[in-house]
Image (cartoon, rainbow, N blue to C red; front, side, top):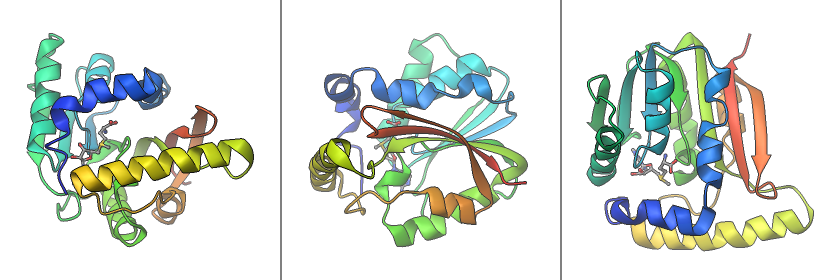
Length: 213
Ligand SMILES: C[S@@+](CC[C@H](N)C(=O)[O-])C[C@H]1O[C@@H](n2cnc3c(N)ncnc32)[C@H](O)[C@@H]1O
């Protein structure tokens, strides 16, 4: 699996296919969270959310883990191009399925359009490991695709998701064949959904999760 081929095209493709919708989902809850000290971003891609988090929380330390070296390069370039400093950012080229995060270190986890890359059996291992990297007060920002339960919206989403998985599996060798809702994995890992926004006929969701009390 590699997003290297897609990295230079990711931004214009997103603009063409989704306009500003995905970015609105990525940033929906930035103003609803307390300022984090340490942020773990998984599969951050070309850094659009990273830039907004850096602007909102300039004193935080960021760890960005991505399996694509070119995506990491794009993210760093975007940060510098926006006139921001990359001094507080650690860019890690690693496969999240093998990477061992430190325990209880991060008070903010961010996985935007990332968990949809994995099959259920992979999520069952990955999500608890990421959850364990969060502190007792950790928040988790998660934007992704979803499938509405009925009606026209369901069938619309099905067609779009089928085309997307077909494309991404071909170009990136994505392991997932279809979308697996991550909710049950987060709940089993001790997180509870705090806020959710739906967009684009229910095709997109933007979530704020926090430790279940
Ligand atoms: C669909 S893109 C999403 C990028 C970005 N977060 C966004 O909001 O658009 C998925 C990202 O996850 C990364 N990725 C996929 N599988 C990964 C893995 N096993 N370990 C680390 N990164 C991975 C890809 O390289 C890519 O940057």
